[in-house]
Every structure is written in C-alpha cells, then in structure tokens.
Length: 119
Image (cartoon, rainbow, N blue to C red; front, side, top):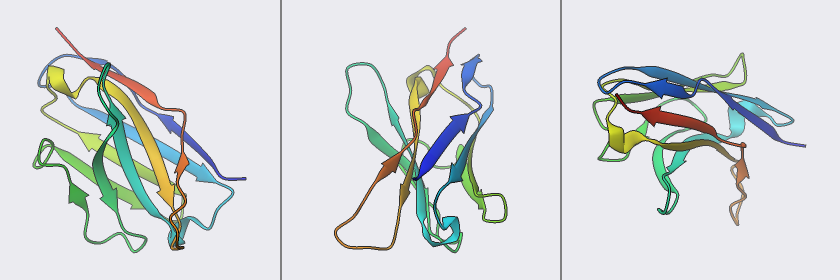
C-alpha cells in the first residue's frame, strides 16, 4: 500500500528556514504528481505547491511564491519542500500528497508534520 511519511517540521522563528521531506513507498514514485498542502487551525486545507512526475513545472500558491521551493528525487522516492523567510501565517500542519496519472483522481496522504513559526 502507498505510504507517505513526512519529516522536518518544528518550531522556527520568523524569517527562518525549514526543509520538509516526504518519503514515499508502495508506489511507482516517478509516475506520481507530488504536492504539499497545509492546514492551519480553523482553516481549510490548501495547496502549497506541486511538482509533476518529471520534476518540471513546479507550481506554487501565491502566498509562498519566491519563498518556498518544491523538489523531488525520484531515485530516493522523496519530495522536499524548502521553506525560507517563514512567517507566522505559515504555521500549519503540512501534508504530503501523491496523485497517480489516473482518472478519476486518487489522492494519497501522509500523516502531516507541524510547522510553527513564532518568536
């Protein structure tokens, strides 16, 4: 079965950086579109960034453009989210998502990792 395990979350001061990782297993990783979502308390889950199976054309939410970078290593079955210039409003649980090239869409989720930006 598909398993996604996030790591790298934690407490960071405003302006700081974190790198999230998501290790995937049970899937042909190179065929999946990979994404990062986040959910803050009392808010809906929102898409932060996604990257295609080929690793090109990364796409970002307007709120993180220029600050976050998504990347993938197909040899390691891992997707990353490098977060810089973090703001308190980036505080959320961050979830890894995997979507295969099928219709209708199927979504696989990790358990999430907490990111807290606070002084």
